[in-house]
Length: 247
Ligand SMILES: [Zn+2]
Image 1 (tube, rainbow, N blue to C red):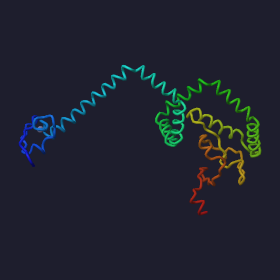
Image 2: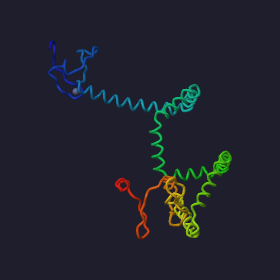
Image 3: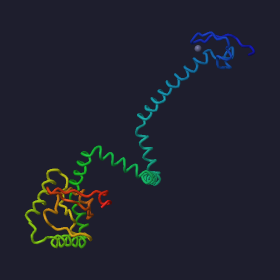
């Protein structure tokens, strides 16, 4: 290397044999090189970057603090000027991410079930009259269908009730459902084990064809019929899919 020489770093005081390779260039200096070696320069630059970053962040925070109102106004104006865009962007986003958003919503509800339930109950209390009105309106619009369904249900139950039915025993099952609903806070229904309205079988309205189940369970069943057996002690077990396949 031509014109190379020895040079000492002003910071770490290391004496380098090759100044040209160990120091960065600086035209304005006497020997055309920096006074700090490359290693010290690199450390110093990193330090200054971090120091200035902290300063930049701090000054930004200060600016936002001092110009709170102006910034708020600007944001508001921006939203007003771009109302349609922002609305559309929101719609697009929710559409594209609906699965994920719904799942997130579901998880949140599960993790704070009590809070959500209380909030919902509060909303129902607050909008009691409105809900009542809506229900009334809905019932009014669909009253024929409601009446038909209720008549049909009664007709089927009547038809399925043989003369030897012990109505008191049946009533006890309904009382049991009512009691469980009250005690657990979970809605319980009385279900006909053999459906009384089914194209293939005709269950009867007898107390031993009645069982108390949660409403969710009952709705899931919706008139489907699974063959079952009753053992000598009167315990009911359903045939499994495998057993049915092998039968
Ligand atoms: Zn150095």
